[in-house]
Image 1: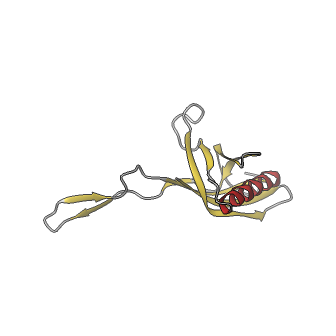
Image 2: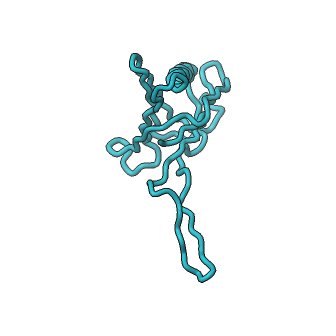
Length: 144
């Protein structure tokens, strides 16, 4: 509970970082409203008319996607907004705009073996004021 009024799932967290070559932006999120990580798609399994199973899909391992909805301090929301704006400016300029994710949610050993990935924003951050010190933030990232 935050401020005794809203429920959340608390984990070791997810850290999102980005550098524009000059400034390092870093945001830690850990008070989720739902599990944040999923796989983008699984290989498709179909059956021929003779009953033979055929699996199709990318030859690359499935990518992960993060649909993050979490409670955070107003300061964390400002930091995420700055990170997103820097990422978007780099993307709009034609530069390589990739964020780094360290995900310690739902892993066997979150401290020594977090999930790390490179990703891009697939949904921009949205912020909703919940109290004077707490906002609800949501955004999406997809592994590249």
